[in-house]
Image 1: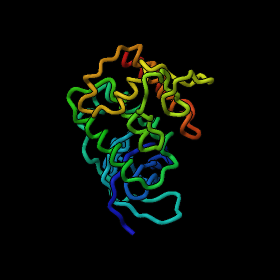
Image 2: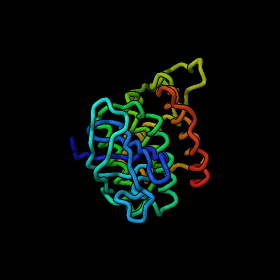
Image 3: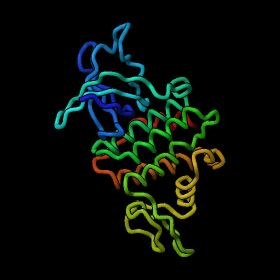
Image 4: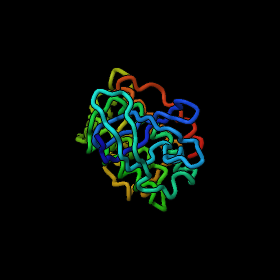
Length: 241
């Protein structure tokens, strides 16, 4: 049966000389694997360049329950990216976010709220003419709400530590190493609450940005099963430094 869906490309794997299997986070079926033939041919119906990380697609697909690999009738970019593939900083940030998303939502079932958040955030990031180097920090902290471990914002004056393991503030220093002091945690909450349109107003030096990113990745590791190591982390830091 044919279905019209929207999709976010997560991973593309070579299947044969001219075919690939693409893992796509879809609005209607969650994460699905699609076999696409002939992507490397000169006149491919669905060319390889539309299957890059976090590209946004309108798709017409055949969907069968309990089938591991589905088939695609049509796929086209929607919207067509105007800047992400050509802007070094934007492209590096998207590659990094793609790796985190792939490791965070790979078991995710249908979740239209999560889908809409990612779709709209990436669309905005492509369209903005003044991309903030803090976008990935704000994105990951906002994403945590949809994944079920948003930081608890309530705090008292005597609560000087943010416990990454518990996701909230505490007055006593945790006995484990996974915490940050309030001065840094305040940036956590600021990035979490500030709309994307205004994050460019948040001023962070490179050292602080790196520390916050490291702590966010620890936060994800603590709250996401089998999260593992992020390989694009260092590349991102090199580009933003």
